[in-house]
Figure: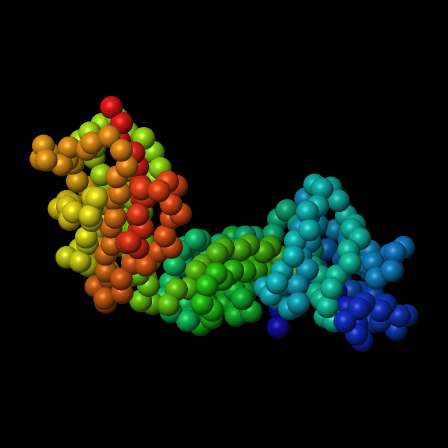
Length: 309
């Protein structure tokens, strides 16, 4: 159980109903925690229906208010914006169970560095590790606890669902001071097709060069590796031999018009490309909308451009 001071509000229905007994319970909980906390919290009725007025004393400004459905403040956490010296706020929380906490300027920060913010993973669970500031006695990542050591922490078994996930990290001191940070991680299926982007010429552009340089970017998001042998590119329906450089995780394919027979003529042209992963999954990205009649879209990644002289 987290040892930070918090206020617990419980309602009998989906709408908040602060009766006298509930208010008494809240104030008593706040008072019982105040002796071990840097910051003492109080709660009062607001002037409008269902409003709650939170105020706090102690600690050092600026402050940060956190609201969550879990006492460790790592489930659907909300952090309303506060002015630097603000010591009270009126909120209208939703739900039957909400925890509040206030941290001050001295609260240590914990950052998840692995998996990295914005990264892609293909497993349903990860070990979240990172760095934490001095003074933290516990770190929580999505409700899983770790004891920091030497300025770092490691939390095994953090579950991820398919799609976008938020890792919410709370660092807590022995006196209850707290700071919360977040990072985003995307879980993919584990056999996702490669990402293909035709960088040049840009889609729908007009170019004056009749022997342009074509550039295609390939990227693997799930560590299965790109299968370069399956890369195919066509210009106006004719296969072209591209030179690929980079790694099986991130590569660039290029081709420069050199044969006079391939010199571009005025009018519309279409470049198409596709590839597979080493596991066999083929790229099937959404097709770009045709900008003009001559833009054909038979391949997973297609771009059209116009040549002019």
